[in-house]
Image (cartoon, rainbow over all chains, first blue to last red; front, side, top):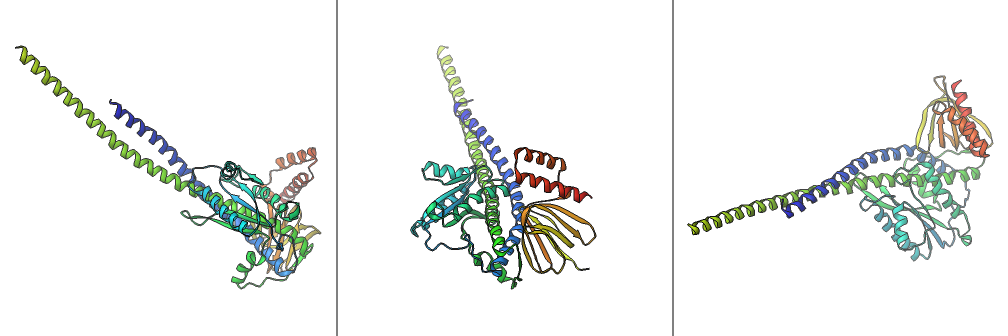
Length: 305
Length: 125
């Protein structure tokens, strides 16, 4: 075999091996999207009921809670960024990071100091490489979050918001995650979680249905209920963001791996053509060498006669 | 007979839903029983068993750890971070967890395991 042909054959082999891997990853992600979507759906009854309960307290009482009161002069804002632990998911992590950067810039323009909290190894690595300070990070659960993960993220953040700004607390909490719109579309979105504006969170839906919320009897008291309710509400919002992020991550990975597989196929096709050409050229060369050799021999033997 | 609709939901799934005639749960200020046409109520739950008497006459017991009970328009929802039906509870595992919690002096863990055991035993009766 000629050297050229051997090189092509070797490249075809490596590309085929890569294609097998990307194809497998594509199929794994495809099955995980469905699972992740089911998880999003399974968590929605809890989120819906919780939203209703928050709406009920908000309309049923005029209680002021530190988590719902706007700071008069917000100076510090926390940004929670949801990225993935693993790469090979197309623009999933970098799109979320870019959205967070835009948000950070906007908050800075409003004169707020921004504190970063990051979920996912990719985001941590991005900030680490650029030597940007991270106030807190969590890794290891982005592709399959459970409620306890959301809780472990939410607890320190809620503490930060409840703390005085002078003692290193924050006035606002924003979250940046990737919304799972459909199999094909995932969009990075930013939301302000805290202070919770009760009209935003609850008024819209309740009014749409023309529903009048009844006057509740609170046990033990409206304040007590709100105290217990709001952290759970924030947790469930973060949980929802994590679940949507996981579904988006799998969808993004599936798409990235699909195009990688397609590219590999294309590459194999081109390389096979080139290899065939090289083989043909080799044969042609061999024939012309034989013909040339035999005619030289014939000439020589004709001369000696 | 009047009925109320019950939804028992945990953070990551719907645990039980159906019609019932009585629901007993433990709030911060004590056990509370809710029957149909109760006044609208929103309460904070403690770790404890929730007993649901279904309209078919059966009893459903679940261990609930932290959460809320809300009742309005004859619809009752129990929201819990963690909720398990009695038949889902692994008694041996709960017993082991109880021993471990006792050994570690983990009051919250002890309470959780106890609630599980209470729910499991009262559910199987």
